[in-house]
Image (tube, rainbow, N blue to C red; front, side):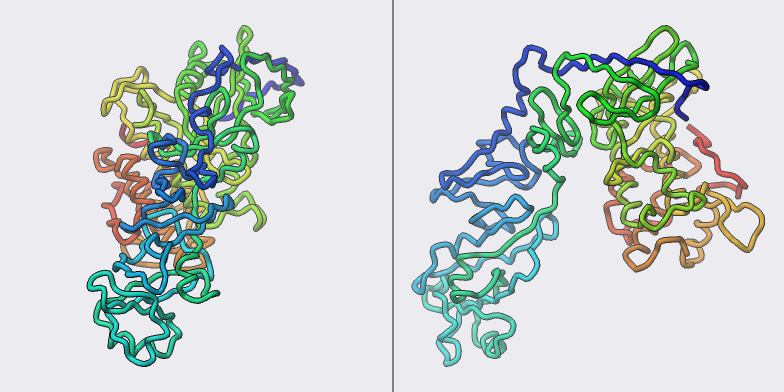
Length: 528
């Protein structure tokens, strides 16, 4: 669906009143709740971390809950062991050490601690950390004594030896230490191994960027109901950063194009509806459906206005426009503006999460009915958001429902459109014109399925390494499941996101999703 613009020069004054959730002037409760806090060592704890039992979980990221130790230091539970946090650097890193080493000396007895595993977390070892081996139950052989750091807690007699991988005596120690081996990490070995163990090592974390929210006066958090980053502002919640508009103030803007500036210099996008269809049903649909949503992958409706037959919707401005202009080969974009495989994958996952939210995250189920590249908008970082709810239907939370002028429909119609869109993304075309040596148009899903069936190279653009091949194959397999002819064979959007985020080897090749090879791609589902 395109924006409707007037055919002659036209100026319209839009007066929009933006109401906040707290018109009495009080602060938003989550904004107040997410004040930074501290254990008794004066170390500030804020997003993505939170102190369990003191700060609310929505003030931090899932899995980043900390506890306060008796010595005043915060600690993090990882791999069934306590890790003391010496310092948090809010540039996405922190220094930690295993608590058993925090007060160690040459007379300390150490328990066998579990090896640290980070594979299922958003934490990772910082670059250039060093690996050490702690060997338990060692006898006092010559060549091992200088490496002893304490005794084994199990029997109080066997020694614990620490060595790095480069030590020439490591092999000898492995044969003579009978109590097992534990891998530990240190940042460096300055001051000796005992001091290095006390000082610990650096971890990096990967979560949503908090800077835009903080710089706009907000406090960062996370909504586990929609599994998305949230910016808690003085009067409400936003997806990325706080609005500069005051509660209840009118904003006067002069609209001559689709993107304009408010008085505070922030950009917005205006969609003007000139000729309304069905007694304004499109306008009503858009306002009624999108105003019920709050998700990082759904475009934000800032406000709306109307005068007689003229109506306008005001949205957040998305700097890169629609996905459509970035994926089709006919657009002739330069290299700087082409999307690589990882970016295409992240966009597909983002749109999938947005659709999953519409289907099961809202108080009522919303069917979009118009998922296509043109209706996926990209911000300055190519973060995707679903837009254009003119055809959307708000339906009760059952599997399918009868909607006027459509008949019996279900969320599987959106699943089908999503699958077709992802195929267009990986193919860089509108599902036609694949084989250059053939003058007839070839239906792209048919062509790509035949390649998979024959175990042939997919031979798609922008694939430069094995990781790209896996990403594209995963997107193709998932999209072919989505466009199955029988709606009952199509996965839910929740399952779609699971498959996209999982291992490509676990995704089975779906049945052939069509009965024949049509010459053009249908945009809508062949069955509801």
